[in-house]
Amino acid sequence: MIIVKIRNGEPFEKAMRKFKRRVETEGIMKELKKRKFHMTKSQKKREKRKLAAKRRRKLAQRELKFKKQ
Image 1 (tube, rainbow, N blue to C red):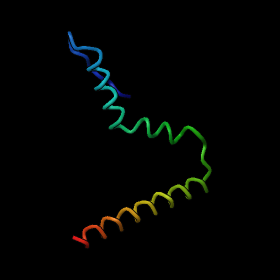
Image 2: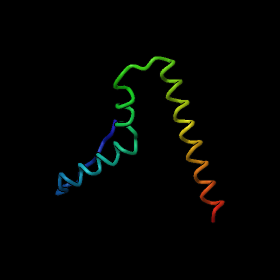
Image 3: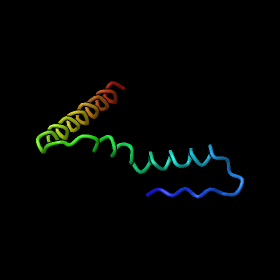
């Protein structure tokens, strides 16, 4: 649970920004989106493989970029 302490005279907008930043760093919204729909084991495996392939492509792109320099 996220708790944001507000000081006396602190504007609401500033407190809201603090709250949003904490939600972002905790990864709550990402978790909510992930849990929005039930995923079967096979779907989870497929998604995991897809993310791994994406990481490999990204790493390969970086390596190519540095080899050119």
